Length: 418
Ligand code: ADE
Image 1 (cartoon, rainbow, N blue to C red):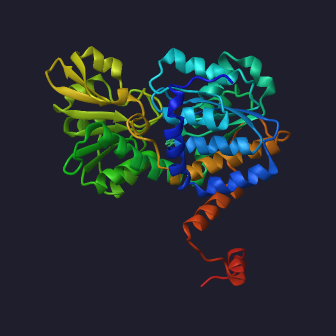
Image 2 (cartoon, helix red, strand yellow):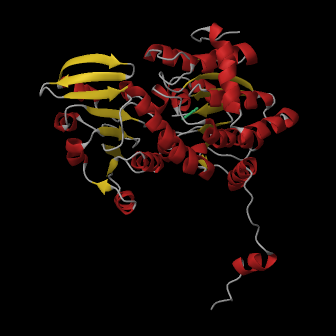
Image 3 (cartoon, rainbow, N blue to C red):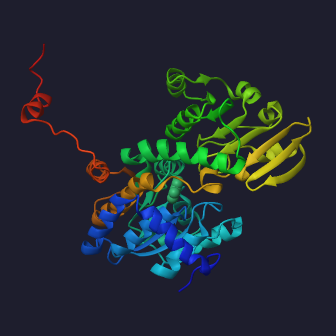
């Protein structure tokens, strides 16, 4: 079997790490059990480009249990857990192509290795598979049934393709399921980003000024957790509604060129390019700590920072010190790559349980609806979303009420008023 991982002797610690994660993933376990019986993905080849973590291992096992032949590569050069890559190869014979810290050339070689299986289904986190298929591997398009997309940034790219009429197969936007973005983006990113920043720096958050760039679901989660740790949170936004919401949530809102002057910590989560630029780095206080938790490492203008830097050194793992021409020092975490996966372990398993339940059920949905789906970006069907919420509540031992017949009738009527 072909694969490319760092070290196969890591498979055993990988097995224990995966066992630990699975304890918090009951919904995916239920789906895996059903998939093993019903084999809804039988005969399909599925190429996945995801962060290679313990949680992703659980998803890969589920897809394989469902009858799919799977291959996996990393969706970010810094996010791979090498012991998981070795575990999947050794214990599940899944070809994995991922090494933490791989260079850009290796990253793309690994994407090609997955595409060489001629997938019927693609599973992306950031749309790199789909984008490669539409640019350099067009020969594969004819065989593809559809794909799924995990993250906000990927969905933005794919919707742009659909709008321009260049998308050549259907995509299910897993990110947009309520059981995904309301939990993974908010609580997952909130906790794991703080985790990454603290693991990288070991700095105290209490009493600091913490600047959160953007106020989408990921940023809301981060602002909430930074506030909970005692920081004074500042939010920057371009969308007036989101900015207003941040104000009402109790945060200070201001433009980045004001925030740049007062922040101790900065984190970008916007999905956009060059959010913190050269001129902002020049305004920062000596010792400012800057990170990104958006999907791509384009949110910080590191080229611009390089041009105003006279000295750069790695001061500790995941922390680079830039001494600027104005003699102030700025610390960039994890090379500007998503800090929750670069310096920590990504979102905790219990939240990925729901995200990846959406992935597995969306793959099944694509397989079942080959004939009717068009070249569009689809939402995850509402019944899948609700079923995942139901299963998660049941796994947590939380019971809820059901509508009485009278309430059901009332909701369906319009006659009854005061
Ligand atoms: N994205 C964010 N956290 C993740 C995790 N733990 N596994 C896979 N993808 C992720």
